[in-house]
Length: 521
Image 1 (spheres, rainbow, N blue to C red):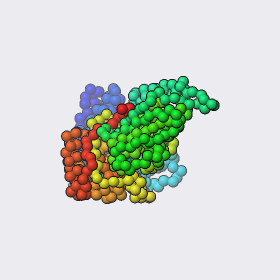
Image 2 (tube, rainbow, N blue to C red; image 1 turned 60 degrees about the horizontal axis):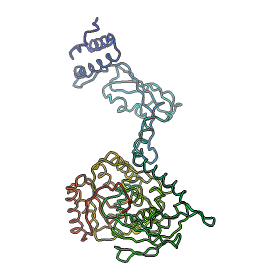
Image 3 (spheres, rainbow, N blue to C red; image 1 turned 180 degrees about the vertical axis):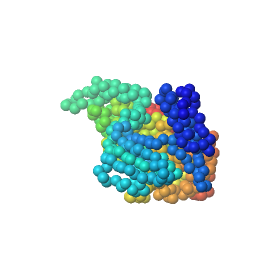
Image 4 (tube, helix red, strand yellow; image 1 turned 30 degrees about the horizontal axis):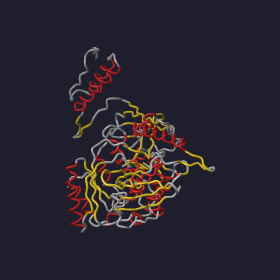
C-alpha cells in the first residue's frame, strides 16, 4: 500500500487484520524524512493504538507487539559505596550487559533463553532460573511470547565523572570557610614574628591580658548520627575568662567556677576547662611566656545531654587561644577539646566540634580527625526540654549493646544518609523523620528516662517533625520549622514529662541553629 510521506499513518479498527495495521505503521515510519521525527511520531501512534490493538479472543485480551526485535543495554553499578550497605548505589559509564528480545509469534506467553555469551557457560538457559528469563524482567510481557538472546560481558567498573563529581559538589566548602582558612594562615604567620627565643627555647608572648569566650549548647547524635553528627544551638552556654599570669609560664590554674553547685573540681588537670587550656597551650607552636588563670561561669546544667562539658572546653580553648592572638584555627583546637572530653565522657567529637565551629558538623573520624561542616539554609527550630533528672554520659554509654543486628545497622545507615540529605537540602521534615528513626541507641536509653516515650508521642501530636534524645539525655529534642508550632510542642513535652514521668523541667526552650560556635564576649 503506497502512503505519501506527508500522510499520517492511520490505525485500522480492531476488527481489521492486524497485519494491515502493522503494515500501515511500518510504511508510514519508513517514509519519514527525519529519523528523530519518525521515532517520535511512531511512538505516539503506538500509544494511541494500544487500545485498538487489544484483541479479545476466547474471553482473553491480548496485546500485539509493535516490533519484531528489540535490544537493550544496562550499565554496571556500584553498590554500598563504603558504608551504604543495602541502601546506596549508582550506575557508572562503560561496560554493561545487552539483551535482545525477539518475538515468538506462535508461542503466546512463553519466555525462552536462546543463547548466552560471555558467561563462560556458567549461567542457566532455563528461563525461570535466570534473571534474564524472569517474566517480570522481560518488559512485563505476560501475553507475548518472546525469545531472548543475551550477549553480555563481565561487568567492569570505570569511574563516571557525573557520579564522582556529585558528592564532591555536595560537600564543597562555603566561601566563608575559605575566608576563615585564609585568615587562620595569616594568624599562623604572625605567631612566628612574635616568637621570642630565650635560653635555647622559643616562647610566644600574649597579646592581651584577659580574654573571655562563650561556647553554646550542642545537640549530638540527632537520631541515627551516634558519635558522628552534632550541631550547635543558640541560647544558653558556658563562659570562660582567661587571664595572663605573667610570672608563671606554662602554668594553668582555675580561679573560680560559678553555676555548678560546687560539684566541679578546681584542680586544672581534673577539670575539662583546665585540660582544654593545657592542651591549647601545646598547640600554640611555641612555649607560652606566661601562665593562664581561668574563671568558668556555667550556663548549662551538668549531665543534661546538651554538651555541658564540651561548651566549657570550647570556651576555655577559644579564650586561651585569644590571649595569644588566636593563632590556632578552630578545627585544630578540636584536638584540645577532644583531650578534655576523653577525660570526662569519652573520646568523641560530636559535641566539641559544633561547640567550637557552630552549625552542623559531620565527624568522619576522630583518629585521625576528619570532619565536615554541612551548610544549612532552611527554616529549623529546636525544641529543647530538660527534665530534672541527671543522665551522666559515661553511665548512658555503659548501657549500649556491644553487638547489634545487621538489620538495625542498615536502618541507621540509611537514615543517617537521610539526615545528611535533609541538612544539605534545608528540609526540616526530612531531618525530623531521621530523628525518629534511631534503631540502636534510643531504644536502649529511652526507657531509662522517665516518661520519654510519652514525651515523644506528645511532641508528634503537637506538630513536631521528629523527636529524640539529645546526646546522652535526659534532654529531649524535637524539630519544627515554625516557632509558634515550637511553643505548642514545648508545652506538650513539658506536660508529658510531668504526667508520665513525674518530672519537673529545669528548662524548656525553642531555639535556632547556632552557626558561629565559640566566640569572644
